[in-house]
Amino acid sequence: MGRRPQPEIKQRLLAACTDHALQHGLPDRLEPLATAAGTSQRMLIYHFGTRDDLLRHVLREARRRQVQAWSHLLQPRPDEPYPDTLQHAWNVMSGPQGAAYLRVFSPLHDAAGEPLWPGFRRVATTDWLAPLEAGMSSLGRPDLATVVLAVVRGLLMDLDATGDVERTDQGFRAFLHLLRAEPVG
Image (cartoon, rainbow, N blue to C red; front, side, top):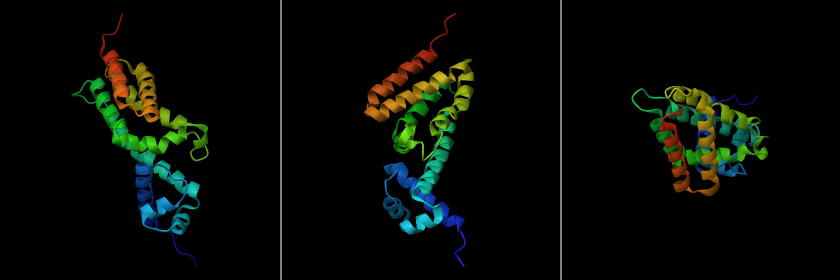
């Protein structure tokens, strides 16, 4: 008779593996995850099946954490102009906390990431539209949510590729200046 599943152990292992991936990126081998979780590679396989299954769990947990944190950042606040909310969100997304998510999710933005998370690129784009539409509604411009999303994603990809914090920050400030400008017409 085999051992019964122990969800609390699996959850603890997943949390440790996700923490490691956010700090170091997705590893090519199981060994770094096993070491970070204080267990053996064999136990990771026992709880998650295969290396790719474990990585899928890690990616979904990292995404859950990111959506929870960043959705809160993008929420409009009654006492704050939405461009100020966006500036604060940008500071977090482009800072150390955001860098952790870039490390994990950047490889999924090309075709090579498709086997680990089919459809990730679509999900990673569309799930930010609702909070941005709500925020842009506070400016009377919910139709600009897609533009805001494109600018944020583009600048984050630029930051990831170049590491040029100063230039990408300047680009975002210039974009916010345009959002604050009086509409023409």
